[in-house]
Length: 396
Image 1 (cartoon, rainbow, N blue to C red):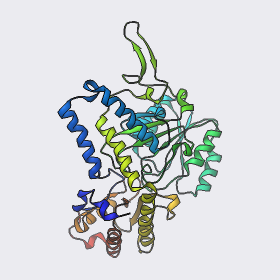
Image 2: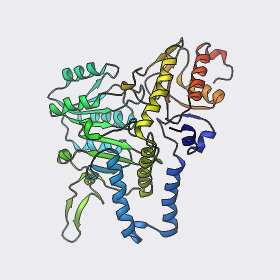
Image 3: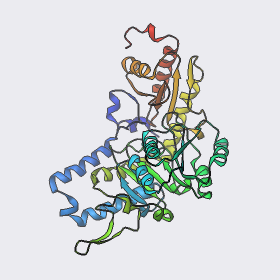
Image 4: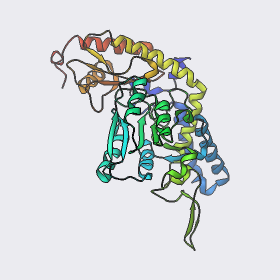
């Protein structure tokens, strides 16, 4: 992999050191230009699906096939969404809940999963149980075997958790839940684009995908995956234009699509969706396996060094098989906000404070990071760990 050549596709890297893919990625030049091309087409030729459907309709089919191929699924199992949040809400609201029903999530979920679950609890009186993420994969499965019950309706997990960057063994967890008749949802926000994923291998009924983190497409598009065998287990909560197979305006009759498309109920920016397909082609040209190998080398280097700095606590599993591109850690005496502020001011690094339950940093390591950038980050953290915030007069 020629990292320096790849970095030329990301001119924004001339301005800073980027460690924030976990929020929103930088879009590479070829993908951004393709998106601009679709928008310019709209400007110069007008709405393509209305004026030139003979061109746009096949292109949309090709785009959906491209996205489906990337995840080794059928396009009939995909529904366009605006992100994982909408995908999860579609599943959550498509199940029928009774007071006392149980829903299992992990102890390290982001708002896209946690907030809808809390809202559902308050609306329907369901019980929430949290899987401890820091258990070993074997102990995670043992925990689930002990805690899943007849009241459990849904297991909803992030493939890679948002704060600690723990990669859960979702294929084994979902397989056990499936054996017990429990529905499963997997949030792929922090794994899609990092390493090869065949969704069917995850043994999940439903999954949420988005375009703008590790897939390097413009903000923002999403997909809901629905296992074809589970299509009729979900109610269609919102039926709208694009949900229907046919609609009779005179006799008020209709039939919903017999695909995951029945869960689509609004318009999307097709230039964004087309650009997402182009982003998959960009990643495949580089090589997904090569991206993961490069990412593993960088994160291994960072994690190993952090464990040798006094006052630093690594929060992400050291083992690459139990983590991904997120490396979270704390530095004694500092808040996450302080660390992020110092790294920006003194080292021109864009890093996110741990967003939720702990004080520290979440470093998102893109595959195009330089070894020297990782070394510089390690040096900066070592310098900060050797002093206290009170020693830094310019710090807020």
